[in-house]
Length: 70
Image (cartoon, rainbow, N blue to C red):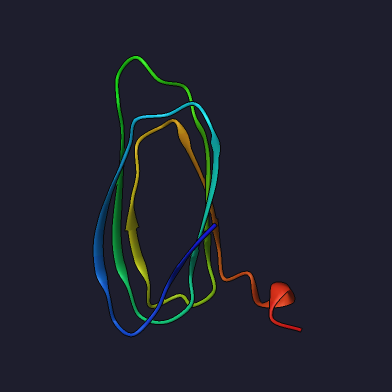
């Protein structure tokens, strides 16, 4: 699991076939890139609508997941 906080700017390059979960907890700019020969299970959970996420089609993205905060 990866937690992004404090107005971070992150470029994540995935070169593995593992399961990866990314939480954007505050205002973040995140881009996710997947290596061409890999098929990872990447899930990005954005807890704020102000986060900006750029992903490829291999990445699952859920926006405004407030239900996880409780």
